[in-house]
Amino acid sequence: MPQAKPQPEAKAPAPMVDEKYGSSAEIMALAPARLIAILKEPGASVYAKAKACQRLAVVGDKSAVPALAALLGDPQLAHYARFGLEPIPDPSADDVLRDALKKLKGSLLVGVINSIGHRRDAKAVGALAKLLYDGDTEVAQAAAAALGRISSPQAAKVLQQELGRAKAPVRTAVAEAGLVCAEGLLAQSQRKQALAFFEALAGGDLPQPVRDAATRQIAAAKARDAADQEAKEGFRPLFNGRDLSGWDGDPRLWRVGDGVIVGSTEGVTLEANSFLITKQTFGDFHLKAQVKLRNHNSGIQFRSEALPGWGARGLQGDMAENNHWGSVYDERGKRGIMVNGWTGRAEKVVRPNDWNDYEILCDGDSIQIKVNGLVTAELRDTARMSGIIGLQLHRGPAMEVQFRNLRIKVLR
Image (tube, rainbow, N blue to C red):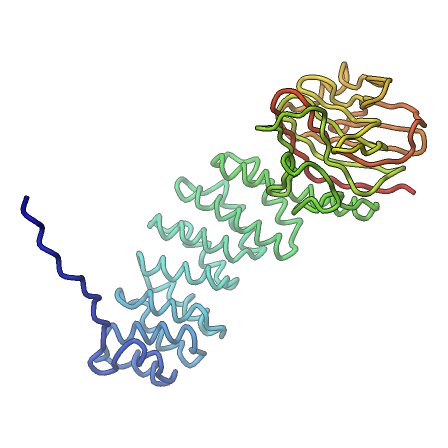
């Protein structure tokens, strides 16, 4: 078989060099005044002007604005001119971009709108609102996106009004911009207006991804409110959301991911129930947690005794697949199920294979269990008045359980 002839090695392309101004590095080394002069020079090459714009993005100031603005209508250099203008902190850069809205069309106009959004120029809201009705769909969509990025109260008002007026596909752009705008309002501590906007996005006849995202934001805001209120009431995290500091358990069985404690017996055969155990003991307390049980059986030990090999003995807030949720069980004791919190109670409110709120309140000899806000078990018990808290993995078939948002208030 004939041998293929060796191919010559590919040579790197020679760097571009402007005949008058030299290489990119040489142009970039010029003083700002010289760069501005290049932009004004009729005979300067597109390459030299592009490099001058790029450098002015770093070293440019108010003096560079008129020369950059003059290129906003140049199809070859408009992008570079906007790149140079966007970082300049002087208000004159906003002025020339707003002025260009009245002069440009098509992709050049879209580019200027994008730059206004990038600079978050609140003075452009009125002009952008008019462009939502531009006959060029891309212009209208860009105007919506820019209003979203500006995220001022007035921009939010415009976008929220347009949710019921704009036609597809601009309406979708308005809805998506609304999400960005509401998030921006939250970041600016404009919480009331932001949540009102999210409510409008969640409940409107809008694309499902937009409604879902708004609903998640509302839920997150409510969770933050609840956490703030709980902190005022004396609750503190029992799990830091990052690692298992303050806990002890079989490292084969427990891990942390995305702010969640994950317990799994996949690939491990348990001879006995195994627990992730707090290093601290608690007597009178109010514990709140969220739990997702994939299958089989789990629970939360409280006022319990830690045993060798990550075992536990004592009271347990129980949970199992289609059973036992909200019950009180005597783990490794002789009393078995002390209160049946499942039948007629927790069975009505448990969300299978989803997150459920679980609360345990111990105050003196009084014990109360709640599942998703419903009281499922109450009893008085003095067998053990203090002990560890433990999260259970049950022996038997391979199982998984997840815990998050564990917080506790010590009563005394």
